[in-house]
Image 1 (tube, rainbow, N blue to C red):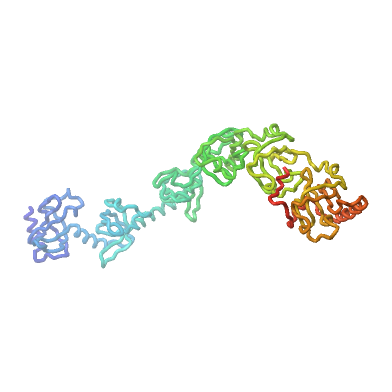
Image 2 (image 1 turned 90 degrees about the vertical axis):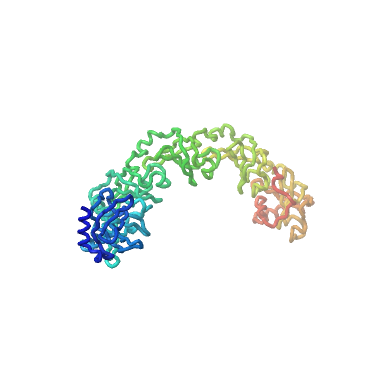
Length: 565
């Protein structure tokens, strides 16, 4: 039978009429492991690789097949033929004749080439990588061997090539599905979708043709730092439709809305006053957030961290990841807030202050800190009392506590007052001794002769140290019978002088002295008193309490008010 067919081939295709770049029908004369021998009626037989046949197992001896003659003879005198190119040539003619750009044909992806894939749609067509899917593929190899429908986007007849797209068909299909889905969904619906993309602000979910945004705040009732902590690309989820924009074709989704809100009946699970256990998950300047359960966090404000310690930032007390106990002190279900306290797990030490440190009690403590207005003395751990500068000395005006005390120094004091609400204890050091000014008018009567050492010199006079750490002022007008222009030219710090008390003012805490009147008789002294009172009444004499503010003052080297303690 083969010989009969061969005779027919020789008759239909005389050897002299066989031409390169033509398609002829040949006869299978031999089937080998990797190739098929085909007689085309020429001087010798040609060989076609087995892979050019879609179904090699269906090949039979004597069967007719179309082949393309690439060359009539190779170097061995055998024709170079191809079954695949024969099909390509015939199919190209069919496609050009019957198809146009926009036509849809099935095809099988054959191989990977630069920039895309080769697709067999009857002929080899080029599928650019950007046209494979709606998203850029991670690997092109995964598509090899797959069969899809393709849309012809370009036919170049001169170059005999075709460009196809799968993406356009997918997008058209998705558009139809998107319109259908938008027309039927409503808020509150539960839909199943696959995670398509993850961003910092949320997750895009494919609802079979329609992409919806699951915002990070709608992923969980609990704290989510990044969506990737909860979901993965490709994961399927049941989500709720919580927003629809038909004009922009946008849908908002919620995952936490498919679960029960943990804030429902929160008061029953965490009643005010109850003790709870939680984990520190976040810290801000004003406090620490404690996760009590998934979706429920409470705040411990810095003011609720210690009864006795002033907490400036929460990291001084807790760290992220710590498991701690706290007490519930407030709940707002509407605002989803729970107020917690660390300090209220313990007894307030200030509740015992009135009993431990009654007013008038003599106490001892260490100077812990100083400010411009006073010094803080630690009475016990966390309990401080404050000594104001006005309560440090009976006899000196203290401008800064550093003049009187040193940090770390242990001092005695008297409790003056207690304010448990404001957590304040007022202490006094000068109250340890009687006020020398209370008996000053008895001790220093007008006309009393005194002796003392000059401690300070100012432009208006000189200060003289008396007994009981009191000081008297010799006004410039009371230094000498002669007019004194500059006090420091007449008196110097350290000079010992004798003077008479010329004025005593208990309220103003002022003792006026006169050196020039030390040797006056009574009548002359009385006249001098009247003259001095006139000066005082005209406010020309500065009170002792204000003398320290004058900048033009010379005093004993190293002298400070602490000598009055």
